[in-house]
Image (cartoon, rainbow, N blue to C red; front, top):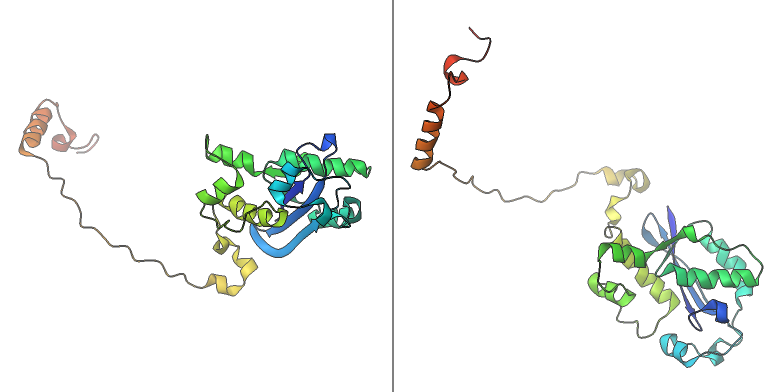
Length: 231
């Protein structure tokens, strides 16, 4: 199973008001394990860079001028993501920007049902808690010390770790034996558990007396007359 963890950086919050993508980062997962395969591009937005956006990702208009435009990398990007699921933190944001770029090129939109929204997963698992990427990294003890600014590839790599924790933890040893060779069939050493002595549960004298009085009230008990149907 192949999934693509995806993140974008942009010039603003709303593609419908002319804001554009300035960076795309994608990380490949196969059977919930990250591979060395990734996609990463800076993009010339063909417009100015608002100060509030620059403070988030640190990508200036001067730095981005002359980089590829989205039209230049669209085919390469679409080839990389293929038809696989897209793991995105706040999927409506990134999908909105990607499909705005697709619309500019008069190409079909990327179906939204391909997106797995990790914000939704986190809110379902931790109701009422913070679910931004930094908060989830702290919760799962994922090192995000290098995240002084947002960056699409770095954030995708962090999100890949967060996603694997959200769906049950990183368990690379649970691959199918047929995919790992004969060595997966070797005996597994199990940890020895310390056994505890049985705890005494002897009844108290008062409990024995109460039990005896109860038995006296039962007419023809089977333990004295025999089981039904016996001679």
